[in-house]
Image (cartoon, rainbow, N blue to C red):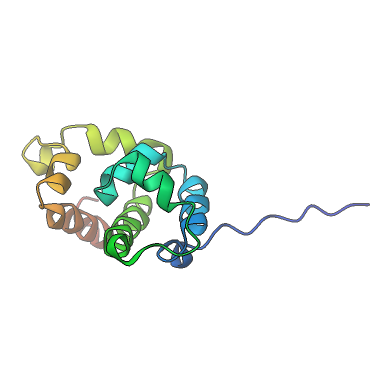
Length: 124
């Protein structure tokens, strides 16, 4: 009799440091390269290159850390497969602007505020 061993999901904690760990974590949460690259504010090609590095270069670590934290928080309230669509859809809570727009214009704090309010049950 064989016993199936469930593979351990890649840790988001290692995704901050290692390109292959970032790649594995990103894939495990169902996030495509295009979406994560936008959240990290880098091109897809740049992200693909960094995902091959044993250690992420210092210049990109802060951007990756911020993007990983945001994705992790959003996944608490939005299923992974719906995240790209949610980011691209105008949202009444943001004055009918897309969450992408807020993130790209440096207003990501508004998305974080929505996450906080949702966690506190403000929208329940």
